[in-house]
Image (cartoon, rainbow, N blue to C red; front, top):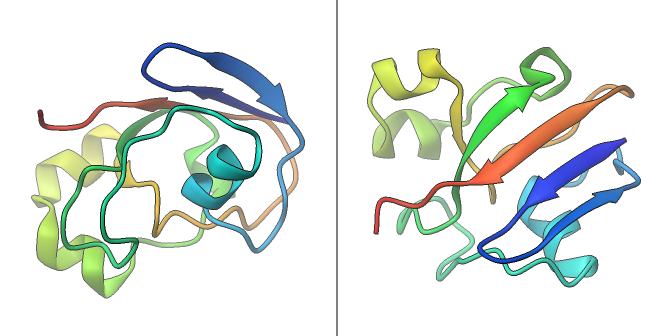
Length: 97
């Protein structure tokens, strides 16, 4: 299961393996900010409260856009964070703006 907390809406949805957090949020009408979907704008930045180990490793785009400290704290870009394993994941939209 995937719990997504957008700007004004929270929902528990099915975690779709191979899909990004942003894709799943948009497919479920969660108000998740984004602009580019390539990992450059960082408007889809989110905090992974639970289930970091169920996501694919950070992408080159994330490594280029985010500080190492942010990644270590559990921040990811929703457009790059791919659900890789079944289980519980909790993501909260936390843009810089």
